[in-house]
Structure formats: structure tokens, C-alpha cells
Image (cartoon, rainbow, N blue to C red; front, top):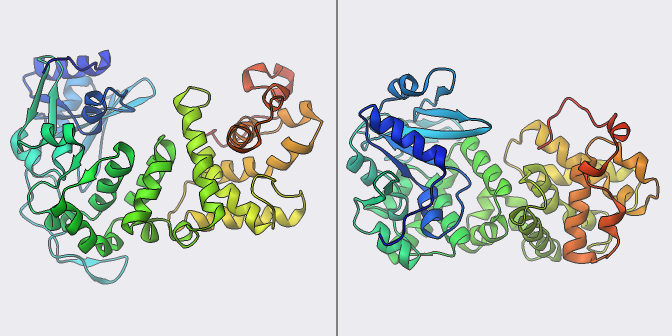
Length: 404
């Protein structure tokens, strides 16, 4: 390498402590992609030769928690950040041919249900999905290890290439279909010919993916800042009809086009530091144009405040994100900020509205619309940020649900 990758100091310290305890340890996954592309990683994953119980011994039981059944790993807590530490695996000997409980029919023959057979770093690399996900980086020696021999080259050329037999990789874990397209959308990568052909052929297998894992992926997309690029990639390749059927069915409508523009506007504000990466704000951003359509409004004009709109907001919000089982506080937060939009735009009682629970997120949703569509030069100054609200105006803002 000609340029050392800039790794967060606490991540370097974690690698150092595992190394000093006698274990191999590397940064793996998306963080390496981001570092090589000179982006700031949103999180770090670490893989090590230490077993989960040994990781707990190194960092102490108060800072660590072992999670997972299908794939046991350690969550290491660093302030509010959670670092995932996995143990090197090898390809499992036992795979599928059991009944898929969700559909009461046999699962794909080679689908992996147990993945806790420990192995070496090289074995771990070869059991991964794509070459650009199989790179290991040691920040102590500034060394990138490319066991597959294609990872660095594919990173430099922007190629998504499955490791080994592409069709088999997707059958082993259908969530890999989604992850391949996230790479296409997030990084503007292209798929190798074999990987693309296998993806189209194996796409129906996504129905066997765990609903909870798909919901988690949906939340990651909403929380991240590339959803406006990832969701169109899902649509182009035929995944969106499984992942968000309502959005797929309405993709060629002005509402969907406006939703993607609003989501891109939200993501730009997050990148620029104007607001935090709230999942519920992203959800409300996608839902808003469809609520306007259901209410018979022009896009960007919002809806008149009347009792029936409350039911429409709830209905549309849940239809868009089916079949995912959303965390209750996320849907409540998104519903609340959508309900406040008409009041924010039309009311002159600023001090009363700023005291309402959900005001901060509702204001951000309004600012997203203003940035993308309205372009009012006075709106932002009219409505104070949370930091500018007087303490006595915040007395009604407390609630049992945490802001998300």
C-alpha cells in the first residue's frame, strides 16, 4: 500500500489488545471499503481468532455481550457505539433441507442455518459472499490481506464478484441478493457477468430470508445516507417487489419520484451534519408524497388538517413498509411528525407548537421539503431548532418513547 488507511483510534486499540493477548485480529467488511474509497466508515466490524468467550475475557464482561444463535459474535460497547467482533469461521458441513416455517415448504437445499464452525482467517475469507467483502486489514502493520486474490482488484475496478459459485452463494444465504444490490447502489459498483446472471436466476429465493433480517436491512438502509441510490437499484434488478411491494407497485408514479428526491435531500442534510441519521425521519420522508396523493393534494402542497387524514397517515405509513415488522417507537415517531406538518406550515402559534412532543423531527421533515421543493428563504429562521427553544417551552416534550 502507498497510503495508510485512517482508522479510528479506539478501533486500533481493540486490534492491539487482541494481538497482545495472542490472537489474530483484523478489520473486515464495509469499513475497509469505505477506508479504501476515502470515506468515513459508519461503523467497524472486527474478525479474530479469539472465540467469543475469549473476547469477553480480553475486554471484560461489563463491556461485552455474546449474541446470536445461527452466528455467535460479540458486541463490544464503546460509549454509545457497538463494535461487532466475530470469530473466524469455516464453511459449515451441514446446510439445509429442513422446512421453512414461514412458508411450510422445503428450504433451498444448500441454505445455511448454522454457521458456528470456527476456522482460520483464510477459511473465513473463502466462506464470505463477495471478494470486496473478503479483505482483512491490520492497522498495526498497515497490511491488507486478500486471500481470494480478487478483492483489491475488484475494489479498484468497482466490481461485485461472488466468491466461488455465485448461484450457490445466493442459495446458501438469500440475504446476499440484497447485499449485492446494496453494493451496486451505495458504491455505483457493477456486477460481474456470472454474479449478475446468478442473481437474476436466484432472486425468488429471497422469500426464504429471515423476516427479521430483512427488517434489519430495511432499517439500515433508512438510517444510512444512500437509500435514494439503493432503492432504485433494488427496483432495476427486481428485488423491490419482494422487499417493499407497495413502493414497487407505485414506482412509476410522481409520488415515488418525489419520495426519492425527498430521501436524497434528507441524506444530504445528514451528510452535511444538519441533522442526525434518524430512521423515523427517513421513513416519514418516503411516506409523505403517498399521503399527499391519498388526500388528493398536489405534491409539495401537504394536506388539509382534518380528522380523516390521521387515519390516512397511519394507513399509508404501514402499507409502504410492509411486510416488515417495524419497531413500534419508529412508526409512532414517523406518524407523529407527519401529523404535525400541516400545523407547522400553516400555524402562527410557534411557541405552542415547539412545545409539542416530536417537534424537532417534524421541523426536520419540513426543512427537507423546503430544501427540495419549496425553497422558502424565511422558513428555517421562523422555526427554532431544539437548541434554540427556551427551557420552559420544552416541558411537554418528554415522553416514554425515545427519539429515533
